[in-house]
Amino acid sequence: MSIKIAAAQYDIGYFRSWRDYRWKILRWIEDAVREDAQLLLFPEYASMELASLFGRKIYCSLSRQLAAMQDLLDDYLQLYLDSAAKYGIHIVPGSFPVRNDSGRYRNRAYLISPDGQVDFQEKLLMTRFEKEQCLIENGEEIKVFDTSLGRMAIDICYDSEFPLLARKQIEAGAELLLVPSCTDTLSGYYRVRIGCQARALENQCHVIQSATVGMASWSPAVDINIGAAAIYTPVDEGFPANGILQAGKINHRQWLFADIYLEKAANIRTQGQVLNYRDWPEQYRIRPLIPD
Picture 1 (tube, one colour):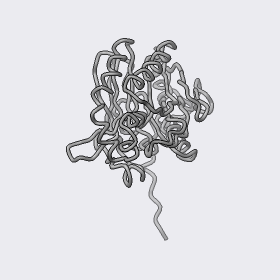
Picture 2 (cartoon, rainbow, N blue to C red; picture 1 turned 120 degrees about the vertical axis):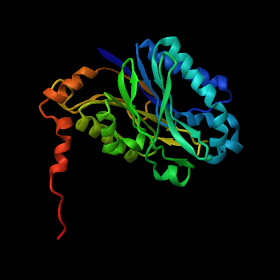
Picture 3 (tube, rainbow, N blue to C red; picture 1 turned 90 degrees about the vertical axis):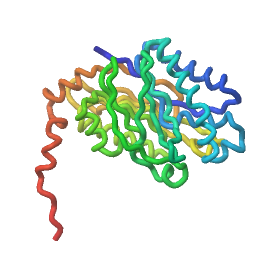
């Protein structure tokens, strides 16, 4: 069975009303639905464009905009819940910084199912920007989600650069890794891209990356966005030789579409030219280097 994936190269906007934001999102979703997409992946921190609704005094301050955005969370989720139910699709909205009981924030990527189920993965490893400027703290729980499309997991941007996180998700049964990303340099984009490709290689699975794109000079959080979406595969017989099923043009606003077959990746794990997934434990039998 194939799954039609839609990965967003999403431009950060500026809005004068919630109605304007809602119109933009519904247009994006309708464009993906017209292509028969079943799973829509929006990028990390795409929600930060909502700070524009609160005026300059708030959106020019990271702490003020994070606090103000909490009042929009329920409406934000309901917008995607309604669309998932209407079209019978799964959606990962842009990740949202959610305030916890300590008054700090966690970067949360929600997974919304057409039957109304809502779950989330919090970002587990923080970049310097998040630690030093953005009041964002790390999550603590790593998850795998059961859906009608298969078992999937989310690695938010920087998390994709750490192999043991994805490995735990794959060993727990994840068949598909979703990587919403937000990077402000070309090197940052390539770090995430290389991480995604490495996770696809070593786990012999599909990895889907989405990205924010374009400039938003009004925002101190998502002012510069450089990236592209892609669908990565195992590197083996029956898949692209470079492990890239589809890749978007950097900084071009668009949906990227692809049909994937999870069973093909599962078969490669036992029938492939190499067996990276099976042979992973062999690393631990190698005697460590002993310094002189």
